[in-house]
Length: 191
Image (cartoon, rainbow, N blue to C red):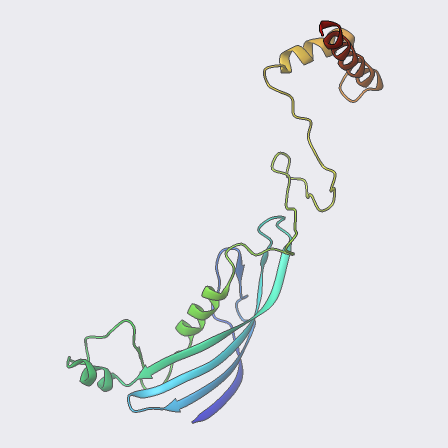
């Protein structure tokens, strides 16, 4: 058995579209290599720094991720003997020791990619972006849009044009308040 602690550069494609380990950044490996009958059993962990963007507000996010690694690497003749086949027929689920080297990149990639969230967030209560205008809702918690029923939009535009006021003007607010009060008064008279 041999313990191996090392820091190695991160390979390319170590991540997904929304979060990844930057190429060349540090990957801290803490591994245990054990000789077994069929080959070498590798177990341990890897720590990486992941960067990406929040899936709600698109702000940059980063965090440390630690993943467990466990893989049996077998000698080519061990695979053939165990399967009763020639050494040229390889099983995809078996990692081979080729020319006395163990390639950790595929198992590292599998472990890291499976550990990454599909929708990373900067914080659990991130409100995200406004779906209508793209404004960041964390900067303006009271952000809202006045929804006008499209069936009444033409009438509202005609009333505003006739009155010579625009939405948001003080006179516009007074007119809409008085119209609202008149409709309430008419409802009371009908009762």
